[in-house]
Length: 565
Image (cartoon, rainbow, N blue to C red; front, side):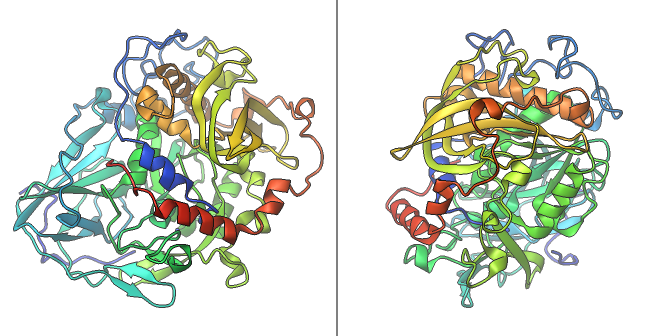
């Protein structure tokens, strides 16, 4: 056995996510097959070579425009020789994916911690119908296009079919905390990053358990945040999520627990809405740190000295402490990139479970029941942080470039009016009056929102501290990094565009407060968006969001849950 294995008898200290008015992420992930885009020599219409799903040139390469976002104006911890670059120079393992999921409960499990520091242990809770099983740990990254590297494998372990899940309390929380504990896993020698543990039953079935080996310090680095509260909100393992229960929306959970496996592959939302962005970030060559959004709740200083924070494809559920931590960091010069849509939508709070603190995500979705778990916009609209904010589901539209000379689009050869079919969806954000200034709208995409005409925006603003904040304004941004493999009419050309724009943002944000070199050029007046805040008609209409949510849940319950990840 490897040194990471302690056996089931080891002793370990037990430690230990606002749901939207729709089921957009569930619907979009049902259509998104995990996987990398097919390698291409060059994306049509773009000068940048696209050798892989990540598609950007070599880290800090000279192919970036001189003096632009991709130029080597490196942070002090410089890209050359940083730990992320060194790690990605190691050989990867392209066989990290699930070969066969098998039957529904053939094998599944969860970890008793969402994140650990390097060298700390966590315990697995595993249920399988097979006599024996093995665990392999893969770190997700670039690795020359392989996508992950195996860092550890257990010996063969005895299988056990665990007791059925339980539904606890009036909040209808699904839990497997009563399962017998399995092996303790020691992460000594594991680099910081996002990990997939692959549970492999001797009968052939397999599932993932995700875990983050988090960074003790984020000083001088871009911080990648795994949005585990959103993963859990949409998790239907045991038949209930914050959206649905066996009886539909009204039978949903009001609190969801980390003490249970994730549904389908065991890492569906991570694979569909986060993994591709991590691959792009690791290939960009910038120094990276890793945390989950639970660390934003627990440690108000976790972002002290960080160059930037990267919120991935769907980051919807935020507690008050999470938001205050990120706002304080922005106000001290930390840049922020929102690479999705509908971020900071629902306000949540945390509670403890039998396995540790902050392992219960409470969200009643009703301010009359609990005003601390209502939509953020009811009291403090999310746009004061994100810039654009959610206004449409379901969205299906072409992304239309409005500000082609922005530094964010350098190297993409776009012009005003360049369109990328399918890139705006399935949820989109819009810049409304009352956002932070100066605000520079980068794209203006007409959207058909289930028969209602609206607009989707990408935008960039700079704060008085010098921090820059970029919001893609579309949930399909990360998916599009796969090119045509994303589906929805997204092209390989769109994939190259998104990967290059994202790399420009990451490299500029890694250099420090972005306003110093890239001030936002406010253009709201020219778009009729410069007036004072008024309640948006869409938002007023959706103050009756319980009826809206019920309709989404009912429509969803008549569909397949999700495609295999």
